[in-house]
Image (cartoon, rainbow, N blue to C red; front, side, top):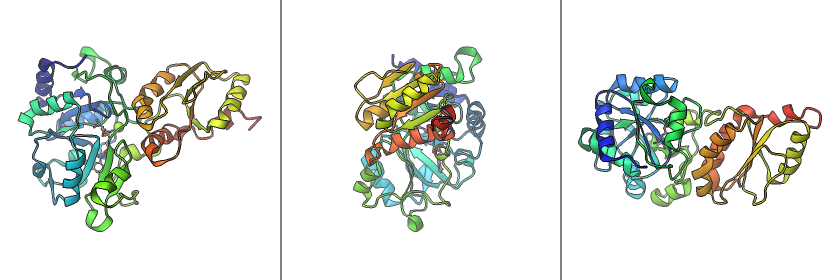
Length: 342
Ligand code: TXA
Ligand code: MG
């Protein structure tokens, strides 16, 4: 089911009145508010349980006037926009002085992105005649796995009159499945382009357009909540396991009475599990299914979710980044579950 025009108009009216709307994008679902209404943006933080010094991305329609939102826009930004917008790329630029700093957690920058999802675009065009901005982090509680379906959003915030999210627009399952690539161009003259979050658009793709590969962030780079070590995490501990170690670890955990769920890319069923999911061989296919898989395995009642570690090459950088963070708080879990053998 995809949102109909009446739903879009209703959602735009809710945004205009200062309310919250969840909407689909090609990456993950967003929890949106009017970017120029500080009280509405404060509501996002309250509902998500997110610290208010973490900036949010402002989503723009394809026809929006970039100069209204950002200033000192470098040539590299124009090139990246021409190549990748609408699409899963967020650019950090200098914020125009009149834009409220609630969207940037008090920093002098702004994160901008033009999503390609048709429902997101319809909403952006219906809101303030296509010239507004919708501030939207992923539509999940702070630190949780991002949602890629309306069902996931309902699982996070509830539904109906009891929910603070007044409307959830349906756009099917998000195609990319992991959050947008974030490139900081706000300090390009002194620091060059910096990759704040890897995603579907790779460092290699970016280098192909601007001639320089974005660097990894230094200590002075802008804060990115998705770059906290622990993020995107299910409630069940997650452990990344190399392919050749998987069968033995599974067997030992099962012998020790542990309930184990597994996400893997092998073509055969694994014994000794209470639940298992096969994800695609390609990085894009894997990313598409990853968050739904983590949510499903989180409901299996397992003591631990084992994830077969994907390849460490550049195509898999976005997926590996999310898996490393999902497993961050569970480091050492295998040793704790198997105290005698390991
Ligand atoms: O794919 C996406 O980017 C999704 C969809 C809904 O568009 N949104 C998303 O939002 O992932 P969120 O808030 O979960 O992550 C946005 C990231 C945060 O880590 C935030 O710190 C960073 O973008 N960010 C936003 N504005 C920024 C700014 N001015 N400076 C530095 N980082 C910024
Ligand atoms: Mg998020």
